[in-house]
Length: 451
Image (cartoon, helix red, strand yellow):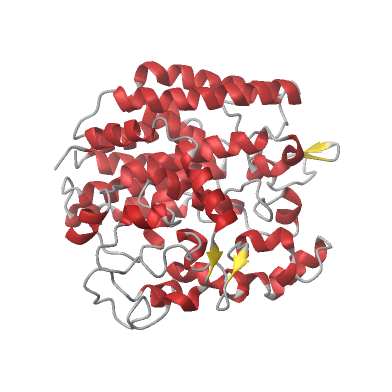
């Protein structure tokens, strides 16, 4: 089995030069394909079995997609959430009319289909084709004798086995895009929409409806948690900066569009008690004027941590670009846009350097230690970055269990420490920076004892 660092470098090298692939693939599919609907996949000889006992694929994928008791069934519930009492109240507050027909909502709460087949139902929410792409070009051939994954992709299926493509598809809704109905504004959140948050490996695990067995690895490239986690962080940074640089998305009248900012740095308890205790901390990596809302840098912090391990020489350049971006936010829109472009360039350069950089069997341990180390942990002053760090530590621990570097029993033995860190970010209202860092440090130290 290749070591984790080698796998990461090999995967990062594969991604170089593929910057336009994900967006082009999904954009071209949306423009040219017809969406046939969930019912087209639901036959008992296809993906509608009650049990996952198929010879090639599970064949109970529809059951998992619509499972009402788990997060794995969340995609099937997106339209129902839209037309719920909460959804209707949000739409009414925003003056959008009925939520079920509001264009600003349907891009994510339903499959954003162009051409639609007879069996397509908008009420299916995010159906099979919402992730896999319009099926008209491949639905009749993808199960035929001699069919291949490469052939399916050529016929219009999204190559979700490629982490970059998967990230692009997921980020459209779980962070945002410039496509119709796929951008959650600050006004939407003020009206009651949940805060947007994303971590590619965790979300992939929640939605997993496939078995990574010998047949799967014969048909598709092997995957692992580190590369899914790392690409999710890098692509989230690039997507956020790209959207921020678009003038029509980054402004809301005379104000900036606050959806790009760290929500809970402002949304803390307010009162006029002269004896009140200040509940926020100044972030050393954000040289911004006191009282200014900071840009949401949760993914930037995670990239900084992994850069310390895989590309220590370039890590400083990336951190400097991030710091300069924050500083530019206190100067003006032109300066901030220019700095965002430089940070995007530094992010791409960091990926190149990590592809060439050192690695080894202890890479996951080292990244966890970096997340909990002083250089990174002092930046956990706000809720969003803190929550992202716990998900990262959990993701990397699970990777080491799958790789056989940590036993299931040993991981279970330190689960209490992980859970304490999760509890420290259970609710934004009760978040305390110092208490969180203590919980995270305890979890990181506990994992370090297994090294």
